[in-house]
Image: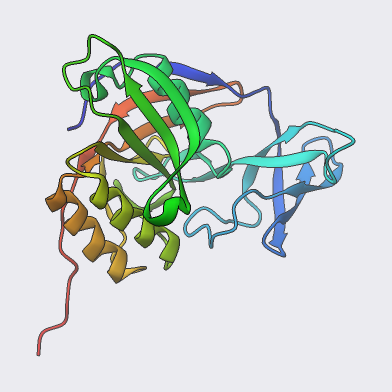
Length: 260
């Protein structure tokens, strides 16, 4: 599934301000010393463990957007981490960004070879049992699309890696498990698509994070067998923008178990 597509800028994000991470605490807060010497507290829009990308003392990038409706004027957007080849890479850690990023990628036509031409895109549409869940993006194919079925698309921000292999999740996620079950139930009346948003450029494969959530791995493979499509999108992050680098391969690897 990997592609050799040239980078496509799909979302302008900057300019951002660089500094050094002092600490992250209370899940939503991060203290950062800016390159100017000023110390600020930034909102951390990532409630997970941030496995492999949380490095106090490491370089980070913040967005400055003061507003009367916000308690904090700064938001933590990116972190510099050791890449798969030993060279530092920038990783997008703001979990509020991937839905916008994938939508922009679709609107730019990057995923048309896999999704077909798209007529309309709606966000946060109720679906599932009792319509108690909300799909990230509901796509309506264009009139000329060869497959007229609606496309239910779920986005998962992915930053945890094992070498060049991207993994999701990095902790137990009952919500993610539920999404896989609900996506599977949509097929074949609709297309169900899981988009792991690989928010770093140094990976070329994707697999479920069995060691973090074995149940998710089981449900992931069941979803593949049921006809759920998986399109791992890889992105590169800079001070000014995010670029789409193409799709990566999906590995349906089985978890390693100890012998008797």
